[in-house]
Length: 390
Picture 1 (cartoon, helix red, strand yellow):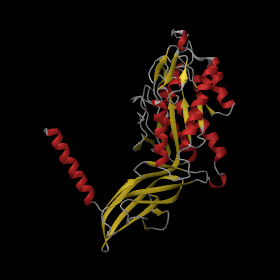
Picture 2 (tube, one colour):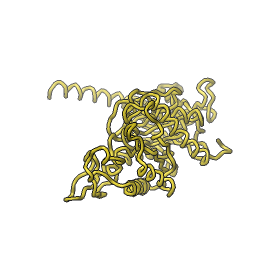
Picture 3 (spheres, rainbow, N blue to C red):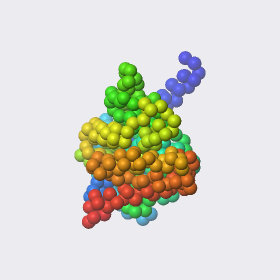
């Protein structure tokens, strides 16, 4: 055994020993986690973990005003199921945050262990997918001005400062997510969660489920494979990555509750105008084909998830000032709204040279992009929320 492996074994054993010696471990929720509020403006907060010493008592209390220490439910409450190897408990909480969730373990009348989560929110979560302008290709990294926006990479939650974690392309620049989340927070006064899954330079064809076939391969032939002359099919890895993030959000949610609000789709630049861009004619699909592929993607995600996930899609065909919009593909993207496949997203072709750093956005553009998304989503939310409990 070399020294590196030996050291890793020692550190792991110490960690496991320390975990066993700890009176309790909380695995859910985690700091900066957001729970999706339901239409009655409440959310179910799930608690999971392990009690290593069953001779004492584990309790929790939920503080909804961290300045005045106002309690949500009157004080300390026993955590259910703590006599089992792993415990699971839950309680309803009002929309808002950041809240504080405190735990204490008492034994023989004394508090022997404590744990506090300082940032727990009940608000709205959005999954973001598409190509580079859905991810971290902006020229300037953005930060959340409110501090009430967090991001989920599939495993952990963090404050939503760029780059957004968990993107399929692992991009490292700026995104519209902080501005979008801040604008929604200012409107609804609830924390906003982001789960970013996009991949730069991708066609809608590359997002289809595994085995879905096409006669025209995308410009960059990743995420697809050739099966015979004149026929390609999707590998399904981007679709599977999207669904994996959706499944992770569902795992964090109570049964029979929606785990997030909607999917925001920003994509189209890698499908519109490829022939004008000098690529071979075989790379170009029609606007009608784009709409067909998008419809298949949306319906497949809903079938796989088992519920009618709301989708929004943007109008996005901009390449340069000389090729700022593609009428055929703009019409195709709008047709998805008109036929009820998706809800109306922003027209980002309207963000021209002063908002751009090439095809991507500069700092001004990222702020404008986020606000445009927030306007569309906010108008939709205003029609879905229970106004008597808002």
